[in-house]
Amino acid sequence: MATPADARITPRAEDYPQWYQDVVREADLAEPAKVVKGCMVIKPHGYAIWEKIQRELDSQFRATGHRNAYFPLLVPQSFLQKEAEHVEGFAPELAVVTHAGGQPLEEPYVIRPTSETIIGHFFSKWISSYRDLPLLLNQWANVMRWELRTRLFLRTTEFLWQEGHTAHATHDEAMEEVLRILHVYGDFAESFMAMPVVRGRKTALEKFAGALESYCIEAHMQDGKALQAGTSHDLGQNFGKAFDVRFQNEAGDLDYVWQTSWGVSTRLIGGLVMTHADDDGLVLPPRLAPIHCVIVPIYRNDEQKAQVLEAAERLRKALCDVDLSSPDARYRDFLEVVLDDRDLRPGAKFYHWERRGVPLRIELGPKDLAKGQVCTKFRVDTPVQSGKAFVPTDEFLATVRDKLLAFQDALLERARAAQAADTVVLDDWDDFVASFSGEKSVFAWCHWDGTSETEAAIKEATKVTIRCIPLPGQGPDDGPGRCIRTGRPSAGRVLMAKAY
RNA sequence: CGGGGCGUAGCGCAGCCUGGUAGCGCGUUCGGUUCGGGACCGAAAGGUCGGAGGUUCAAAUCCUCUCGCCCCGACCA
Image (cartoon, rainbow, N blue to C red; front, side, top):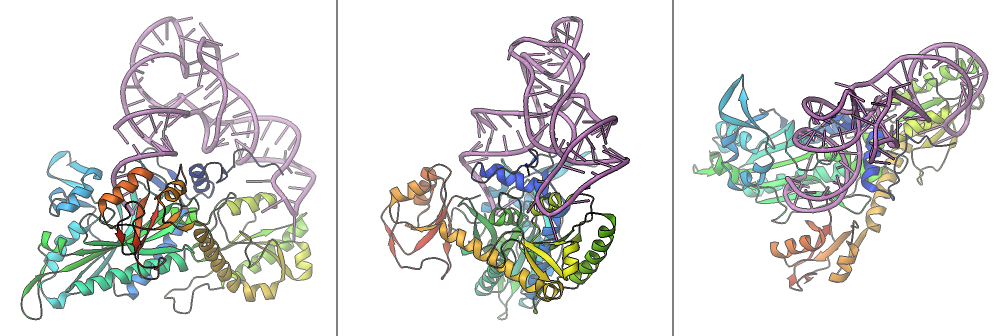
């Protein structure tokens, strides 16, 4: 019964940041590279989650007309300097290659922190007519930003992401694209990650360096802080002008293209951890779980072992034919099932797979074989199922898909409830300060006078930032009011929280 | 980059103050008994004490430098 001292996950209530690290380590998702500052090794169980994220998003991007391409890792330093705001935003965090082939380079290369510049360069070569538009590209890539402080998945020096880059003939078209992708992100977060998000627009202080406007999805973490989980930028004609991306429109006039860019990164995995995991370890929603189901055989002697393993293997094969994908999906999503036949006691196996977030466990022993049933237990108790359940094998196979999807929905509902419990509408500055004292954070809907000065003053006083100005339906939508800090007029409430 | 904490076996740590044969728990390997919520007994393997330099007869321990990790800030997906 005693918990081994070494396998301990620090309880959230005791030390939240330590809990996060413990879960990432115990779930075998990743570890700090150490030999390369600020970088991490994404281990197979963590990488498999990323692959599932990729699979679904890539399918969505294709379905919305995008194609994948790949651009160089290295970008001529001068490219970064062509867009004033962009260079100012990224200069401090660039890694620069100054030597190659044993010689100093004539012009240093920067390792891409993002690819707007080099893609802008190629867009200018590829686009000359309105007939070339829209150009809708996506790139799966690694990028590097020399951050001062790193945290596994949430902020690493090198990270994996996708970056979409599109060019359009009109601003309206570009805006449609920006919002289309924002909703792809939002729907993905909720439907696949079971992570509720607020969709909104960034303030001037928080927007992407070089964008006209940035849109984002903001997710609620269990400690009340917000995680920017995805961004979609309206680049206007800023990069078009910087890289001379011009086209002849239908009237025959030359005009600069209207561009967008958008991305999500391996940070999403950090969000997944901080949305669902508990003091026993990782919790994964079935749609992103690399392993959906583990079968733990129970036996007392060799004879039982042979019988149970044979039945367990039959069960495993049957489960592998279950397809979790929705009818409109463009790929099949067969269950990944592990039959854990290691020579360990069952209890040890239970803990092993729980720490790794496997949604469903099946215990199969001699009693079950005799009764033609299986014992099932979901990773966390929900209205779907609490504790162990004994189900006839046929019935189990017939219902396991629905059960897993119901579990997925239950996780989303649980996360929604957690977010709702941490969400407040505030109109009084003293209440505001109290809500964010110490390490505390909540999702606070507050009025703001719309100025960067006030936003900066709030941040200075409380470390709270404006996460976003909500899109219609994403906030309280209760009309105009008075700024919580200055009392000046405000058109509507914005989402305020501390952020990762 | 500023403040704080920390690098000793795969993981978690003690030892350092007061220099003198490198330890503990878990894990791993082998044998046996076990097996429906982290088993037990016996045997064994495993460490340039983050790195470099210095002081000393002698350094995990003292001094200097350096690299990295974690937390809090500033910066950010």
